[in-house]
Length: 122
Image (cartoon, rainbow, N blue to C red):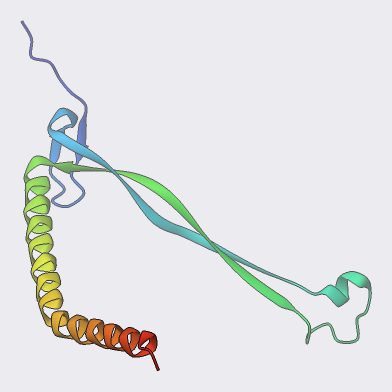
């Protein structure tokens, strides 16, 4: 029996040529170009006296979706890096929460004191 041959692809990161059944497909959005234009309401209506002062310009950016392939080794490295970044982001968030606790307690106490003074009989 002959061995099955799969179509090959090139890894986006390490440029290794691997069979497609051993790679992951991903879609990346990238900027593909821009267009710009201008319009003048006076020019459209027929008043040519202040044509350059009243121009409006606009610009539009175009994007396209590009299909990329990532080999197993690079995918594992990317996952490890993402896991590490998520852990660091979570640690920073926990640090932020612990630093914010005194402020939350202080402002909560201020709100409660304000409500007590507001609702106190005079």
